[in-house]
Length: 522
Image (cartoon, rainbow, N blue to C red; front, side, top):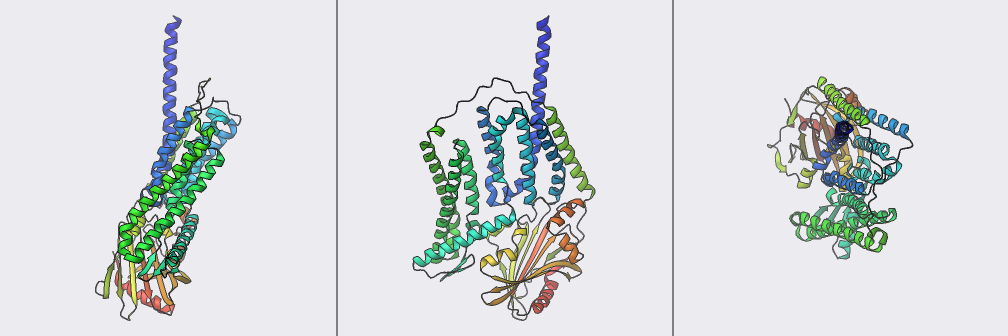
């Protein structure tokens, strides 16, 4: 009789345990799915962060590896504090999702979401196994942060500094080889023309990839903290040196064969140098492993003397909260969804004197990921040379994701031009449409260069300058977009360059005339 009663009781316990495991899996799945969903746009479209696609797989492997040697769980000492931390992070999840829906490109928000997700995960690990489990499983979760894109300001500073350093080193190489060369920002002037050192050649991409691999190898081989730091430093040095070799090869080819030679060597040289860099890093880690007798001996997995007891109810509450949050966000934006009030495009001035279509470099296409666009140059009626670029992004989470950090005031100084003035933002009425125009004056090898830049967010009104500033991608503008339920519905930019106007007002009048002809409203 007792056996008969015990069997159903045992089966019921197994069912409860199985249901609890499913609840835990769903809660963590929803939490991490949204984080990965937030980052996947950068991973897919930004070649600099393509390596992020494999990071979730590596995190899963490292967690599995750590699970094999997990210590015996112990009761947590700070349970109330952990529960409070989970509650605070879960509450913060709602405003993060609300703002992220309107600003999917905001990297500060991506970092905030990543910290929230990792904090919740580690807090649950602590509640399950105590301090020993927290210490044991912390690294795999924190390792995920290498896949989160760097803040824009930091990234641009690193990129610009690396490009200038690589350019300067290549100029020295050419001069030592007897080739006359001058540096203009990130551009090298040689006898055959100008060779630009672009972002793809800055080395930041290989630097980020080697950082990820260095940390992964350090964990894979169970190195000490000191050895892991050494491996990271060695990886950074290898990435820089290999990138200098790559650019040196391309610059030498460009000096002797021109731009066509660079295009044919660009991808093979990049792939070869990347393989050499990664193989060198792996070789260094193997040498360190051989010298570290403690790391060479694999750890014996600990045998758990106590079963793992997990209270699945907090996970169920978390899962319900995540579903409610996502539902609330979608309802909020659907109830405020609107269609852009104005649509405009450009008519390429093919009838103008010396009109030429300007091809977009493959590197720029890969970076911008625009849906429609192109470039053209022509000569105005007064003899001044004009250059125009127009790009459009369709509605979606990745619209104009990267153009915001590639404005004239950031990119042109890197190409050797000197910015004299930023004349700010003004509204220019063109064919009944208000266009937000930012005006810049540069010096281009002793010649005046005026650049006019218009970024148009399809959800914005642009009624006045104040409205354009408030609807811009500033902190206040991003928050206001979320509070008004204005989801990103596409964007476009127009950039016009003209040479030779000494007076800014004359350049502005000439711009107004050209815009009347090229901008069509419909």
